[in-house]
Amino acid sequence: MKNFSLRVSVLFGLMLLLSFNFSQAAGRIQACNPSGTITGITPPPGKCNQEHDSDCCKKGQKYKTYTCSPSISSQTRATLTINSFEKNGDGGGPSECDGHYHSDSTPIVALSTGWYNGGSRCFNNITIRYKGRSVRAMVVDECDSTMGCDDDHDYQPPCPNNIVDGSKAVWAALGISDPDDVGSLDITWSQD
Ligand SMILES: *[C@@H]1O[C@H](CO)[C@@H](O)[C@H](O)[C@H]1NC(C)=O
Image (tube, protein in one colour):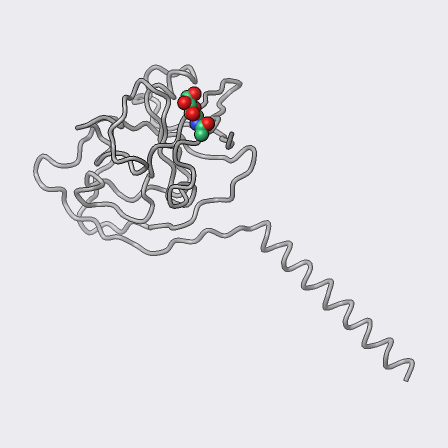
């Protein structure tokens, strides 16, 4: 009897240890898997503004979509890209947060769908850091990771899930006056 209960408690302990390890591993991985794919079409003539060397959808090409983004920390790694938030710029329609266009001379950003989180960060400021420099920028828009290759998204592919898409004022504050030549930067960001 004694032997039996010892074995049961050893087994129970082992199971606890295992499930603890599994949940820890799951926490570390924080998998953000694609939610689907979009098949590109050829943009109609005159569509897909190639300002800032924007990508245009290609007919038949498959693009992954995401509803999630990597988890947020005090040093969230992201890719900074350049966007125009002005009318007739390469940003497509007006900003998601307020339905308005914004001046590219103000430090503003769009976040990938998962980080945009249904607008919960609208008008909040984030701090973007790059090589010892930093800039505070206001969230005004979504970089849509779930849709693309249509008129509302300027016939551009869906956004990757780790994008901070900044105005030229953001880039200027980080010391880069020619974002088109640079294309993208590995930055970190945090919420104010
Ligand atoms: C973000 O920064 C701008 C400019 O400094 C400020 O007007 C705005 O109130 C800030 N937003 C929040 C939510 O604090």
